[in-house]
Length: 449
Ligand code: HEM
Image 1 (cartoon, rainbow, N blue to C red):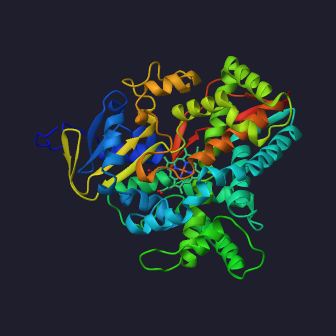
Image 2 (cartoon, rainbow, N blue to C red; image 1 turned 45 degrees about the vertical axis):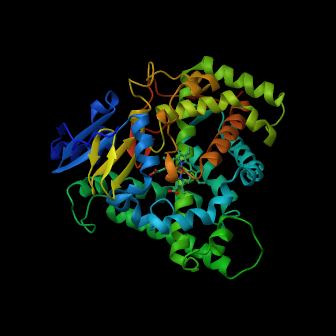
Image 3 (cartoon, rainbow, N blue to C red; image 1 turned 90 degrees about the vertical axis):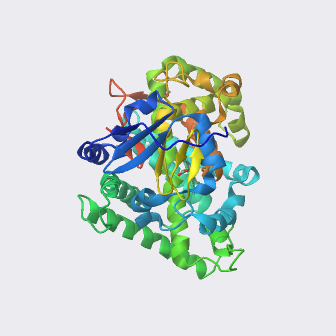
């Protein structure tokens, strides 16, 4: 492809008012409908052209080959900066790199292996909590948030040092609730201080979350028992260029990042999976059969997890339909070529994972829940970047292996003895609040099997 790249176009005009209303109500509605059938779409809102890509080859070209031409940009800074500062998810350039290197070893397969018993124990607590409420009705989203939160604080923060779990969960929701407003105000270039509904509550939530973590760090700096967890890694981290260590604020940025990115996403993936299984009894039966044969009817143990391949396929397929992180955003730091077009410095690019995973050029019957799409053979036949729930390139999710392992453990432990049935006749619509939440709580009838 040596010809001169073309300037962006043709461009779909989207009325600013329409875009703002969609962003505030549900940013998923601001995704141009044509990106579900076209590989690339240019859309103009409030004067600026945004590039939308939902094509595996272009995703590879942008997020992998041209990763150095892309920064997280103003959208991410506005939405997540107040909570996550410049931690691993939000930082760019060399500040991002040394943070990623500092924690990488915690996510290598051998380290993850050691965490499996803790994941199973947390899943057993969740199962017991559910059984205590049987027969009854539970909010499975809420139950899964508690479960994955327990897992993240047990595995990464040696138990969490008495953090108030309920208040943390409410605070994260309070913070994410008005996120549509931060996107909308970003589109019209409003200043950061501009008031919007829910802002005061969101800022109070951040204050509570950050101060709770600052206390944990102060306690760890004072010393005491030797521990080997994420906090010890952050305390020991040293920038190879400047040799400096992390300030308390930078430590809080990263703990906030791991606590939020590390539990909300997996919890949502699990909640959607339980809902889908309840609506597809023949698939649920296959999962139950696999769990029974792998465990021989005994309690789930670490060595069962890698053998539960169909259960993993089910979770993957649920994340195709409901990717917990459904849109990736980047800003061009320099001009670069994407396909036949020239993307200019400053252009904002979106990778709508939600649309890529339901794209008519990639998936047959995209709306149908079919875990067979993730069999080894079917996966081999597809482009690697047709399915990217964890992103792609150097900024790919550091916790993908962690998430898959915990999701399979939670599904297996719970499904083995607990039956869950969705109360609502139709599945709820997904609502994007940075992550992809159900519009109405996923209420499920619970009973012992
Ligand atoms: C099903 C669960 C999860 C999903 C769907 C998910 C999805 C993602 C995606 C799409 C990104 C890339 C964002 C971008 O390119 O802008 C990301 C990054 C990240 N995720 Fe996850 N994630 C999950 C679980 C986890 C877990 C369990 C952890 C930690 C224990 C974690 C920590 C992070 C961090 C720290 C980053 C930033 C990495 C970097 O920029 O270097 N995530 N995640």
